[in-house]
Image (cartoon, rainbow, N blue to C red; front, top):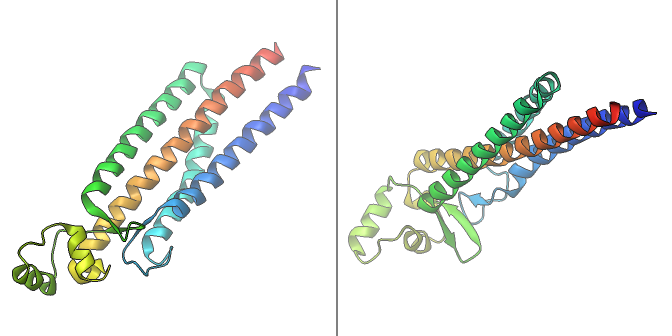
Length: 194
């Protein structure tokens, strides 16, 4: 009588792995809200595709973790879950800190990436307007176009770092949730079998 439940438990664990993978692969890329320009649509730059590729690769991490957890002890699984949770907290706060330094809210609705290396046009603007010093003020003066204020290579670098930190936070949270689900699902299956 316990064998069918054990089989159902295995199916549940596999389903949780697939749901975690799909949710993190797509969810991270879809919820990332930083843009390079006000009129830039979502997925308009390469960073969205980098996030999706990271999400797909995360599926392989889930598969390897599932394999490792199926062979390891309960405490190894708990350690993996705790480690993934710790990484998710570290990546989340790293993203928040880096985002606070390199984004601004434009027109109270769009988060735009900001840079550090000004264009020639922005330098002239600052020379003529010494009272403007905040990155958000510069973006407003240039009509919501960070590419007119900072060099494109600088914006791409900041955007890439933001998207990678965001996805690492998202993916490590997914790994933690999966590891916890896998750990306690496997533990409950062992109790049912014995």
